[in-house]
Image 1 (tube, rainbow, N blue to C red):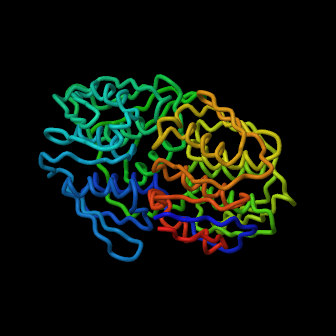
Image 2 (cartoon, one colour):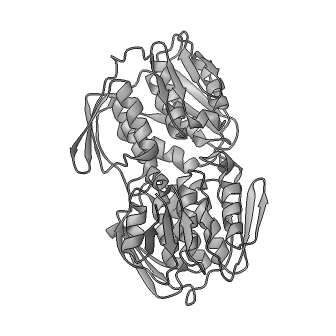
Image 3 (cartoon, rainbow, N blue to C red):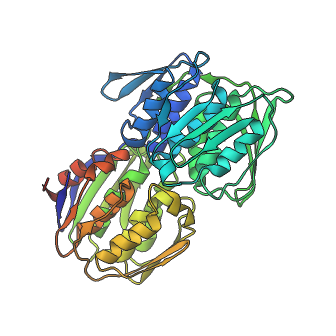
Amino acid sequence: MKLKIIPTTKLKGEITAPPSKSYSHRAFIASSLAKGVSIIKNPLISGDVEVTLDILKSLGHRISRVSEDTYMVKSNMGTIKPIKNVLNCKNSGTSIRIFCALAMLIDGGLSFSGEFLKRKRPIIPLLDALKSIGGNYDITDNVLKIKRKGKECGTIELPGNISSQFVSALLITCPLLNCKKTNSITVKITSPIVSYPYVKITLDVLNSFGINIQESLNSKKVGNYVISCGQNYRAQTFEIPGDFSSVSFIIVAAVLSPEDSQIIIKNLNFDKPQGDQKIIEILQKMGAKIEVSKDKNSISINGNIKKYPLTGLAVDVEDTPDLFPILSVVGAYAKGNTELYNASSIRGKESDRLSLVAQGLSKMGVKVKEEEDKLTIYHCDQLEGSEICHENDHRVAMALTIASLFAKTPSQISDIEVVTDSYPNFIEDIKNLGVQVEKLE
């Protein structure tokens, strides 16, 4: 679907935060590893999470919808038969990385295909780490085959500076391993973990499902995880929290509006370890007016960039890479310049996000300076509308859509359906807040 985005001046209304993509992946996978029946409330079920659900169903797990926002997972754990089919992971990094590790639990292992492999996104360090527990793999641009040979369990060494999903994959899998000569496995992290809050999300889900892991990291997020073998996942009722990553786009839209705007966002749990709730602190430091009501699980944004002008900052995005696209947009509207640094891991996401965002803003008349691990965005008095290119990256699509809301001329975006990967109601929500969009085709 192709849309025309009409520039607007103000936004008003109330929305409910969509479910967390990260929690949804992990909760469904943990449910599949627990004998019995689990209930998942308010999950995301589209995009990459749908890839995870399809793989779980291929492995024999039964997943059924029992009400509008509640799903039941009946695990097939312990009776999974060898799978001959090649599992299509599309471009879902979470899916392929976690299931590569879980292949260690399945006789004959698993085979994967998908856009992820064709794009040569990072996975080799994880595959090499799995060799320490018997992993054996063969990989091409089209297919990855991996299985476990034997029950040896050595110390696993893993770099943390490429993808936190490598760490999460091992934390999910290792508690279920049977080892010959040891009752525990040590995962040694050899370089600082990027996107560390996502590891905390993994640990939060695992703890809810009865898994115990000892974490010992220094201030640079280097150290060890000690994992007892032979643990059992416990079937659970788990509620998915609202997603700070997704609502960051709505928060920024309100903050950047040139006239008085007010938006209330509900369904935000501040007690969960979502790193992207840092968007609130960053915007407040820049000058935005945002009120947090933790007791009501909500925030209120009073927007008017003329009344509450923003000032550019230097922001470390190592732990919050999913905020990079929308913070780049903020930089275009903030006075002075905004530096987003420690951003090299962003190049290995669904697209080379650093380069793609830089190109998108440049097309809109924004001056940017792209470096290997940093993007500097300079204030732009007036953005121009453009033909948005997102290369099927949902976060880039949403970020550039928000940038276009306050441009001088309309913009167009094709294949907007890509936003369902994390925020299925994105277009509906911005329309309800006052944005005008026209369907072109």
